[in-house]
Image 1: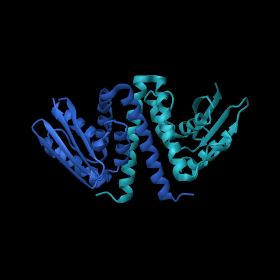
Image 2 (image 1 turned 135 degrees about the horizontal axis):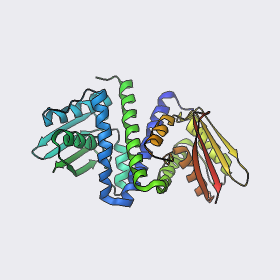
Image 3 (image 1 turned 180 degrees about the vertical axis):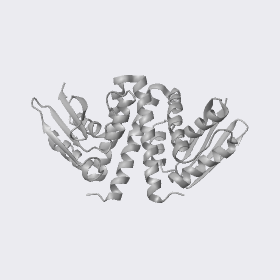
Length: 157
Length: 157
């Protein structure tokens, strides 16, 4: 029988497999249009960060909001070891190292699917939409599985 | 900064939210056709059980296989306190999941309009196994209030 620690890890794996199944299913049906589902997901996640983690959006500088999202991901969620996010005019670029979701992304990429449920992208897009009132388009999801690093980008429209 | 335990709890919350949002979006778009996504999820879970937890399917009795899947969910994943597999006559089966760890998530899914928890990993893993053994069976799942879990039914097609 697994220890309590092992059970928790296995439980996390089950959830990751379910997310994999949903992403694969949506991608197989809709292709890139599946990215439209990220709007709802990002909004819900953003609410958690605002209510439970003290993230402030209204009136804050967009770069400060993005930097704080990165800090929360590392310090409060431990989702990655390093997280750098920079806003450059209408482009928002992320560099993420050692994301705990890397194995899900590997499996999706092996099937030719873009890992569009990336929480960083979804939450950051939702935050920018709320702060600046504009839509966004995910423009890059580059996953380097060998070096456990991701380079992501979305564009404000 | 959060402790490691707090980080794990925060990650679980975030994953559950991803699951909730993604499942709700999928159901909103597809309705009961969302069950078509259950196959990839179930197969993935089954593969892990075979490769890492000693599950054997070939040449085994379907009830025995489902009992072993259930044991793995309890002992290795801590997914429920107890899972009972019963024969329900005419080659049909009933799987009773007591104190399911995802009961809260499933209640939220139903409150969000997802009529059936098509992401149930126990149902999906069992059905993937039945399919592998060439048993064509319809599945259904309902809330089991007294057991704080679910009752999953597999009926011959």
